[in-house]
Length: 312
Ligand code: CP
Ligand code: NVA
Image (cartoon, rainbow, N blue to C red; front, side, top):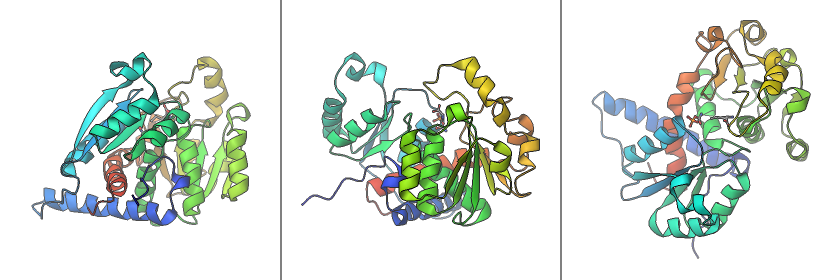
């Protein structure tokens, strides 16, 4: 019997132990890469001969480059595709695209807004599929964020993370992480931009340690980490209205001062400075945003090694 495919679609679908192994592997590979750069032993190439297809329906800097470089460092290769250049853009179905690509490549990473399209791809692919961001979630990002938190502050279990902003894909993956790793997630969103019923039902059903609310000050008070994201995710339209609703949720020095004095500030980037975060905070001593960006590379490698069941 063939082994089940290891799709990386959402954090809440993967056992905590396996997520933990991915994080440990990412940290170990990061250390080995740094040692190699300082003249130490060469890192392993467990994905030699493997090819990753990367499909981007939307722009990307970090996800695209970190997956590409990650594949190269692990000995494999990647192919960059955009929906517009593929027959997908002319109406070929996701299911047929999945069947065809599976005959050529060893894994598929996709950034596509429609989460159901991601699920459809995974259902019809015979190789692992990785969620490189949908409207619903961004699990690769939060793996890098968990790694970053733990590098700076130790185990995240039992700690408190605060979110100030709108409900979006990054928040959903933070919520999934809170449920898996048992840390408190205090969420402050405008009532009009709050998590939907499906998310609320999931929190209730799983008893995830997540507190939903509308007040940024009470969400942030005493937190170990404050997280925000752009007020305009890819696909969002209602510009000025959103802007006005979200103004009180800006992470500035005053809001940060309510968190623990050693609290970290996180943002997945790209940032819209002056909107969701001030320069003072994102460039300040509590900000670890570029560590998060760097860790996308190492986290991606942990995810790839898991998908391929490779010993790295
Ligand atoms: N954080 C993130 O996913 O960045 P990109 O959109 O540049 O990939
Ligand atoms: N929430 C953002 C994340 C970008 C990496 C978006 O979906 O555009």
